[in-house]
Length: 514
Image 1: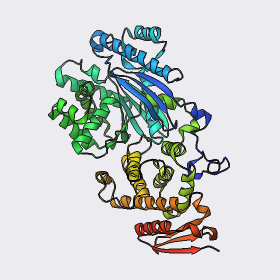
Image 2 (image 1 turned 135 degrees about the horizontal axis):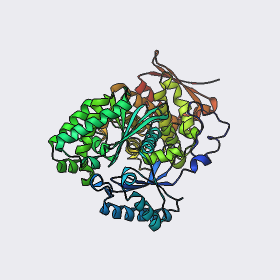
Image 3 (image 1 turned 90 degrees about the horizontal axis):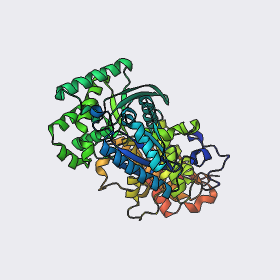
Image 4 (image 1 turned 180 degrees about the vertical axis):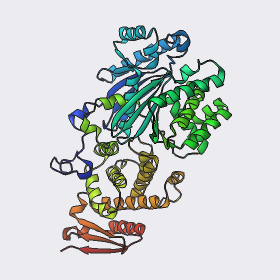
């Protein structure tokens, strides 16, 4: 990290000083978590900026431990074998990566099965890994904390569906409120008697009981769990949605109802092939669809948001100091990327200060995107120049970034595309531009061209070499050069300045300060 740009005395203002290199945050690097669910067993190893972690390693085995649990009261024998084999592999991988001891949690199937304790003992004997069996309330809390890791300002109800259970939890003001658990996991629902009519009746009665305990209009449902994500993927396919990033994907109640009906009317194998969903996961979609349909009818949410973060991320959130929890996950992740990959770490903040006069009327949500763009403006410099703009766009729209809605991803990507390229005409990303309105597209172009000029104008602190002033009513863009900086305003910098003015539809004025 550049010492001057990140000096301890410097005021980071709106965004606060970065914490990812703080010892309390670095202690969360390379944290490995094993999640033993009713349907899958997964190892996730986190790394990167703790507040917005990247997945250093992620492996899942669909063991179906909870298959037949309602009838037998025991874990699936085949599932036990597969789960134990997977956990043995995970332990070997962790040792090979020199990780701290893995943390393992088990949920509904293991806690409800008569041989659940025996399974945990077997795992500990065979692998040395101790499994923590959590109850439904704790499962709901950890899932909700996972949502808060991605959305610090989340407000609504988190609904986490596993193979054998479904949990609900309130989230608001960065805290988890009331929590409930229910036996509405699709694996367990397959054992309900009475055909489809009996199944629908059971689901309706159970959800109405949940609603009586957790009533009210909460506005938004946050969906956590593989079955929900499979339904969201199908919703994308039905709509022809151009950005296939599941995290923060938004659905309306009307769209979900249409997708549930569409699923019922189509062949599951065909849908599975179309969306790349595994056979084991797709087999649970019909039951999960009926649960989601009833949830919407009962809770009447304004919209539905999909979260890729859940129990595993909630366990990481559990270990975070409060001051880290309060941080913006997007900004922390972008800072980490800048330090790791930019040519001159720390320049992003200087660039932000230089171009900020162009955005005096911007609201806080837009300001954070401007900051994020400045931090990311140079992280793909190693890409071939002919493809740098495309790599920038891909990096923003598909990277593992928390706290970023889909249209914000596209805005960020488009601004970074224009950081390296004047025109977006004939771009292969054009279908994604449709997620923005015309003003947002124009604003992204202005931001990109402002970064393009600022980064070329000075390679150190542009604010020490000149000042941008923008007068929107007069349609005037002014550059005031410090006397010593006159040689910096060469032909290329001049061309980029005029390109920025063109995007602003403004006249220009360049003068030297006294």
